[in-house]
Image (tube, rainbow, N blue to C red; front, side, top):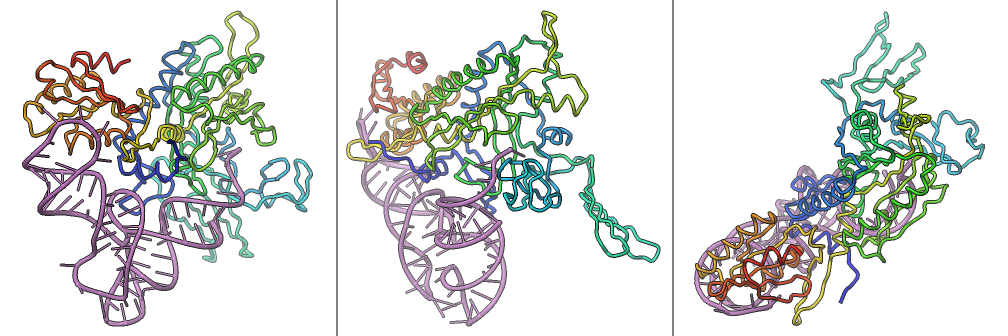
Length: 470
RNA sequence: GCGAGUGUAAUACAACGGCUAGUAUGCUAGCCUUCCAAGCUAGAUAUGCGGGUUCGAUUCCCGCCACUCGCACCA
């Protein structure tokens, strides 16, 4: 019955039925960008809403924010993201230290002393750079008295040319430079103090955010899995250092519960304990939650214990006090942080993969999405059994309007014959179809058809809402 | 970013150095149809973009763009 889901099946369905299109498609596309169609955006929003409800609204230790995508460049200097933007770096394969290629002597790592283990020089920085305010990228020339060029100033550099024609390039610290954020997390950390001042919650508490992030990936791959513009759902959960192990374990459980609500089968979700060598140096523990995607098993979300690294950095860089003052008067301290970080596109992909089914009904192939009801982009579709019978159409419209008012995401469908409509709704994962026939006019009952079982039941029109709700 | 491959309609595919670029499904309109892609009629939509070779290019060549696979990358 169930076969291996291929990525191309998902991509094709997404395109055909209006879930996800390639970005800028009419102009030949733009690598690493994807656009959500009418059904895709609804599915995505349903996932986001479920996340927000689960982790923010249903809890009393959580605060939501929505921070700006453009941030002061100092944010990225303090976080370490801005390093190497202008100078290619090499990485020591042994200790992961990143160093300017021209600062290395004799191929020896000045951090760990290993010789000859450097990667090729590369731009490690993947941030999209932009300028805030009016800018002109016209080089400014300065001349010596003999009219030879003394220096050339561009947006990013001052190139000074000495009497021997040797060029020395100096990176400008242009205050107008900004970046599209490469992660949403910093928008939370920079607002930690604000939330503290406004609410002064008890520890532990968390700040949650859903938003876009941008990374100039070298090679976007695997449909929406790795793209240059993507959504994140992130929480920074602030705790006393001593509690980190306990709180970490709680998060592992909460994450599994959430993945369950997304309808992801347990045997496709795997915890990968990231070994110390692969972890960021400030993280004492990281678990990658992996999922069996069509292309391969890959990271769906990450859970990281980030210690006090980020708040500590901000405190040093800004000079502002990031300490939490316990209400019992004990000694203030900088809280530690546990960060569950969800990729929205990856969640969408995992949900679609989990829901995709092909089976046979009376010898005919049937494709359907067994989406959890609370995620389905269309909750219920309404059809008149026959569209050339005005009395059926009229009644169907009435039922449609009633359900539309209740659920919002309701579709009216009178195209082709009834079987076609069922198949069409199957393919976009609509859990219920309501059909109005001649009996409806007599006794006010309708056919309620179930997507997964294809079973039909006869119920009162007035019972549809309560029946679907359950 | 490197290497290989692919690019024809919404989707899956076909064909051809030259006639109106086909097929299936899907889609639209009409007819029909009393519950799982029935049928009839009509219709719309495609050679990724740019250049070259040629009398003529969707087809051959080059560049770009995009996608797929492998490598690398994923702080």
